[in-house]
Length: 211
Image 1 (cartoon, rainbow, N blue to C red):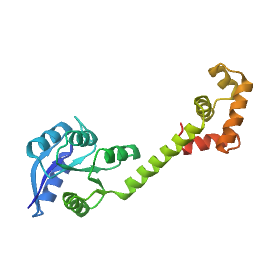
Image 2: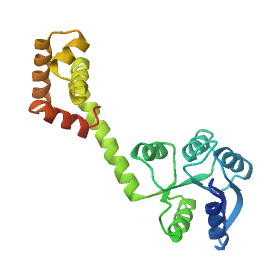
Image 3: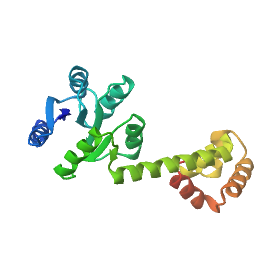
């Protein structure tokens, strides 16, 4: 049985190229195409395709929005996102919303066709470099969460101010506390985090996403 598809991309030349790509393959059937998010979702609801292949950057509802609608409405269609670039937070968002495939636009056409076939078989096929960055970001968040749990809310606030370049006197003024109290807080922060001085503290905060 053929894999039934809906294709969506706001660039008509790319959309036509995708349509030609899949129509050349005997095991695919293109049911509809769309040039924006709302039209893509409407096509999925109407045609109930096996797989929706769509660009992540589109007007009237981007690819992530469409994916979330498919996921929340429990539609049976599996979603493959095409992207030129995707930041780590967007990858995590897509994974949480049940994306079945993530493919970089720069990948060879044969990779896209293979991904869609595998997705139709029930596999989850995600671009390794995108997933790696996303998992690094997730690990960074978890580390930041642990650090914030170690520090008091006031200490966390002071860390952010130090990283922003504020001196002790400025921090004291903003927090309405004495400069000596700021120094005491900093000493405690240094001990808790195992850093020495403002520069190390700033680098520590940046690397672990505390800011």
